[in-house]
Length: 93
Image 1: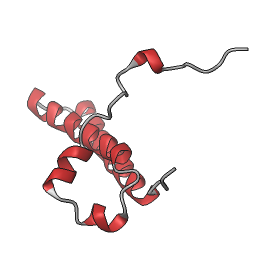
Image 2: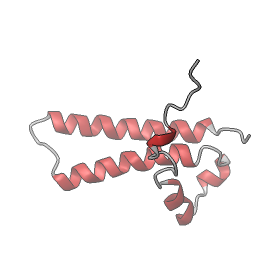
Image 3: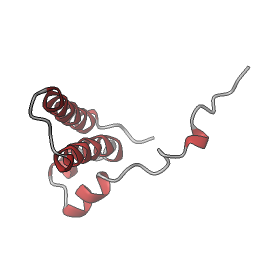
Image 4: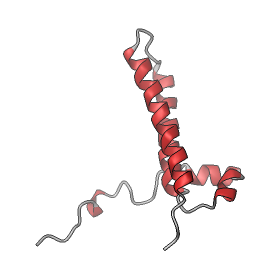
């Protein structure tokens, strides 16, 4: 099994958390985000969460020097994550 790159995962999780905290602050303030701003913020969060997963095995040097193709591929929703039929398939005694 490939080694997880915790630096890549952590940096993307931190970015996602910061973006969510900013969005939460905007929503709870008197100046709410527009629907477009809301969408862009959510897309930004998803991109970082997706990248945390998809680039979890990337070497730090490759991540640091990512190509446009890497950026796009790592930002995609992970394959299989939306398949609820595989969720919770633990063996039951």
